[in-house]
Length: 522
Image (tube, rainbow, N blue to C red; front, side, top):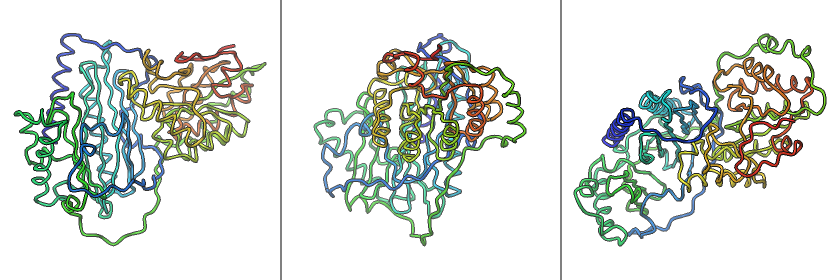
């Protein structure tokens, strides 16, 4: 894996230099991108709840792998997340030229969580450094998206990351898969060689070679120096292994055995013979697991005096007469505490808002999703995992919307009527895939950047007009704090707080499929 990582980094660096020298550019339509957050990873950690164990269908023990058990690694569709343990956390960077989304787990154990955060920070810093010369260069863009799955085998948890990077200097997206292993009882990261019997790699390699040379789908291309080197029984070739309750899954790197067009091969090794190759650490006495939650760390909490200063002239401001309306919108959630605080503030003035949620967070917060609907607010589709949708192929682009729709509908029975693309980035393909009004904004609070409740309040009250769509993020405690003051302030000025759909309906805006909507003025 180290060899592949070094080669991957060198490959990206060389391609970028070539692109800079030749002035190559990739054109996509993207507007109103914000400034990147490049602070410590800890400042972007988002409150989450532990996901209960996932029930999987039993697999019949077999001695021989059938063709259905192996093949190009399509991960069961364009997006497939398997999370048996851990808490979902997310890190976002919003800069126009360099955008990143990193989803990762936390387990509530100190050393393991620290190791994960260090790895996340390394990915973030490497990406920004690798693409730093893109800043300010017309048409030069890069995007990093990292998703994960988790698997349990006794006290050992395997975390599998799918790392996808696209850039203007790359002909195709680069994709790698990487595994990390953690002993949650002993609170320490472990290496794969600690978890496999001495003969494991030899046995796995022998079987893999035999399989690829016998199976009709592979035997004609299982040859040549590329294949012969990639199948050799060494640690580098067999470093991406998932430890499962019923056996192993071995994932080969793209280009390790075949041309990239063949996909990412993998084999499932199911049964007692293969499970016996796993060397489990000595069982430690079980301790009662405690539930942990972690709130996003904002800068120093706002004092009542600071917030009062931001709104001290609210009563003397000119009030709006007539049926004036604004739509508050919140992206990237939901979260447990922040979203509920905002809903409570809306309830106190009889107002509503629109929450553009991520599909992979809906599964962790079904009760909050239901609370949004019960309060009378609206849920919109903000993609499944927050990639730049303009960088995706048709299949994965469609899946980003479809899986989020499914997640929301499974909880509420309702399909979202509106879409907001991550980073506000869209092109004609995104508009077509959305199939619904594509909601932008007319007031950007930059709440994710300032993390300052008073600044968020000022950003709205200094700019707001009838018909505005206001952008905020319910990830941050400072935004919830701001909302608790901002919502009654807007109400006192005479603004009715409505959902985006209500704003459009009351103003006769039909919002044809894929049409961007920035505001709905009278």
